[in-house]
Length: 519
Length: 103
Image 1 (cartoon, rainbow over the protein chains, first blue to last red):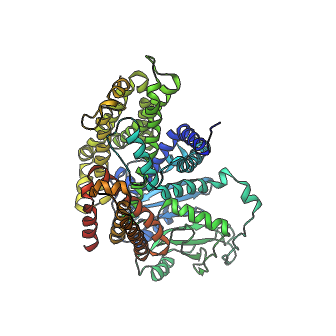
Image 2 (tube, rainbow over the protein chains, first blue to last red; image 1 turned 135 degrees about the vertical axis):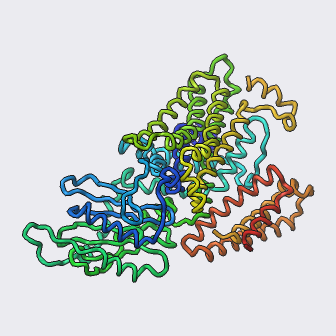
């Protein structure tokens, strides 16, 4: 037993942090990338271009669906906006009720031949599913989020000089001092963000982790809303759906004026008398997910219906608010950039914590070989902190190099990512720790720094088009890749050893310690 | 995202930082008198409150507080790195953000 509460909390912080730290690092890194998921998708599918208005795209998509999916019972259409260049349509075939067909359309309703890729959606799904089969990935991510939450709270308790150290970062000091300063500073400055992101992460899947509350506290279900009442169905049971063009005119009159037009529309129960077509508007300056304006129409007659009243009670409202905070769809480009920076700080927070565990215990490793536990932590640190960025770089390289006609191309990009990460797992087994750090960090830096050149070589016409049309997603991505490369290169240069002696700042008394640790 | 709110946040944090003996010594090479500490802290908190109001005015009452927390965190990181590597350069982000706010 630890003698004081603070020491108990330190022990808890160490173990909650260490045991799930690698998973938390992966979640934070890919989650931070997810803030720009549509921009990443735009870079990974450079063939798509944006033009025309959203309503033009809606009309073209409706016309297209009326030819390919005329008998489908359900349509979903995601329309282009500032961040997505193309229309995505989904529909169900009557004989395959669980599958959705999918097409990507341009402004004229023609299907676009863009390379098959998961795009930024890979990072989005990875950060809560971890590429594991359903539902185990979500459960593991949930355990990691809970451990992160515990580590945040215990870390605050364990931090003795919380306010005195608020702006304190002393770089270049030997041993743990600089690392601990950086860990504390990144933690304290963005603590509200970490608490928000971790707690909201747990709440998003609350029905998966703690389903019993919903069973006990039955919330008021939404009233059925004005359902479509239509003339009796024809003899074959298929009620001809009303054309969408007049509905789109109504939508344009209602919403077209101030620019926040329709974001998506869906047609449910097509071919029946109860069919409803719903147009959903872009969210606007609201945080909560529940705040969405809709226009509903009777799918069989085309007559407008009253909008649905908001569903659920306080629980649903709270869930929507926290979900909305986590997704940050309300954020404009500058605010999203800020969130990205805070996400990087969180990634650095977890990473420095993992590294500090090993630095603190290296002086205790006296034998010629590392003990099993210590060696395991050192190697998993390398695999995660250096290997995961390396695997991401390989994913982007695969996107540019894999042949466009390859079957299952999107899956093959992910396989490349996984094989690279697997190699990063095996590599530290064959190399000394310091050398393994340097090699993986330099490899990652090299791949990131040369990625824009690869982009110019393999997708040169798209890069030129991006420059001409000022496609900030594409250009910003290339710039960000250079930035990632610089960060990894800086880390690689400093990864000479745990306390690589810096002649100007290391006092003589600690020089022997540095030498014996670096051996 | 409001550059003025960011400027207020950064200057508020600067005032609070200089109200701490350690950082006051690092930048001004002199000890921090008690009255100046109180004055700096009051100024700092006032500027941070102003930053909160500016963020809410620019983003609305829902997104404003969220944007404020993010802005203060980023400003804090900038100030911390400044104090760690180049303590004398602390007015630089002030000038930069003022320029952004005026453009």
